[in-house]
Length: 346
Ligand code: NCD
Ligand code: ZN
Image (tube, rainbow, N blue to C red):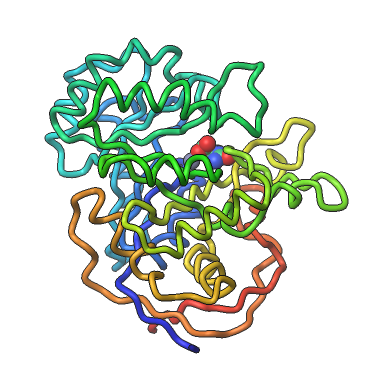
């Protein structure tokens, strides 16, 4: 097979940052995707509807002219999120969920939730309004091994949330383990999961290949090969609970290449092509369109995109670096070869 044509895909988990970084990255996503769920972890975070709508306006203003990309906004849950915030957000056509960062879990999570029991009324309101919960599923207690954080979160937190709020719609984001794949499969239809291109392509060895490789460091951290294989199997299976979410998370070169480097991998530059690489390596494109373009929209209760997006088999080399204010941005797989390329009509 040398060419593919699929319904225009969506990215169900994306970091766009804010001006002036936003302007440097948004066109990459808009070129490949019809819509994206926009993460609210700005500093300060996107906590209320007004913040989300103002951020949406900044994104719209940063888009290349004539482009019909649609940002799907989210709220950032804190210990102080009010039921009224949820009610207002769920009534907005622009806001599509609320994101739970356990405090301290990752970049800009300091405002995150310190104790799940504080969110009882908020979860109840979300459940009642069918408003999506997007979950960064990692336990944050310092004694938990970094490679076990997702598994421990399932046992200690996710299981409890689902027991107490059985009708709550949840996206378990950027899953990285066989445990998470098994858990999502065994759960009812209110639980879905996104999978990133990098967790489908690398295991934890990549972070330490011949030296420490900060551009392969993200959270949740990449796991062992057996976990990567479980993720590939889930993505390629076409099962409707698994869908694409890049977690593309740009950080400047100095912020990554530092004694205490930031977590985050920038994959938006060639996200669709990276996902195509995964399905190609697995030798099975049967469910590529479902994973990229159908399952997420169905899970979110949104219509599938109208347009089509094409790819062709073509070897090409990713740039070593991309423009980013002041410094530069290193994309995932910088300088390496990919074997599928998006066909962009003039
Ligand atoms: C994200 C970021 O940089 O905002 N980093 C990451 O490693 N994925 C935050 C997040 O989604 O955890
Ligand atoms: Zn993220």
